[in-house]
Image (tube, rainbow, N blue to C red):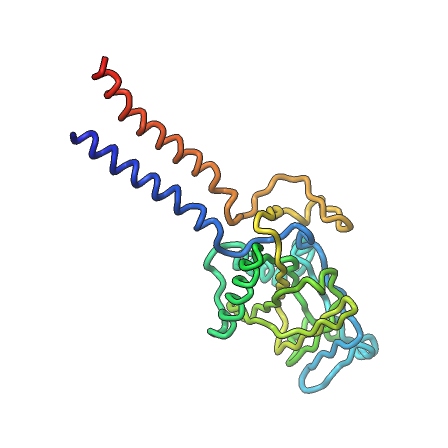
Length: 261
């Protein structure tokens, strides 16, 4: 009798755990391999940088000694240490469940609404582009007071959400799709920016080594994945649980069969 009760408890617990895992795996944000995070949006005319109260339009960048540098996540290792660190921190925020800190409730509500919209369509919200934008003035990194960015983006028509990391928190950025493959957004400062799109719920994530060996023209990646994903890593655990349930069932069936004989 004690053995039967123990088996019942173990079986119920294992079944409950196995049922909970798929629900957990569906949560969070993932990365979509269409861009493999190796694209750097191109700065276009219409960009205006404000430094110490002076506006520098795109057309005057060269003569004013102003430059805007866009660094994709895949190229972080070739960038300044501060830029690389900022991109790595942004990646960690967005790749893991429950680590996105929002600047306010409105930003979280906008993000949640985008996640729900994607889910209602049978999709999931994923990051297609992650890049850092920095400003140089006379070859010195100079934090601007305000920025209007006009960027040429490959998937401009697919963007579902734009987020910008300010300090250690994320804000949702209003943007305008200009209908010509460019988007325009206004920011108070510069740091990592993430573009989100909707993707099929079973879209796999690329690995974290996309800067090594990728073909930028195709986004192909043949190396093994070591990036945290939002579900695939649970497959082995699920199989193990099913096997354990089978063993428990065998414990019950075998003694009964032996007794009947």
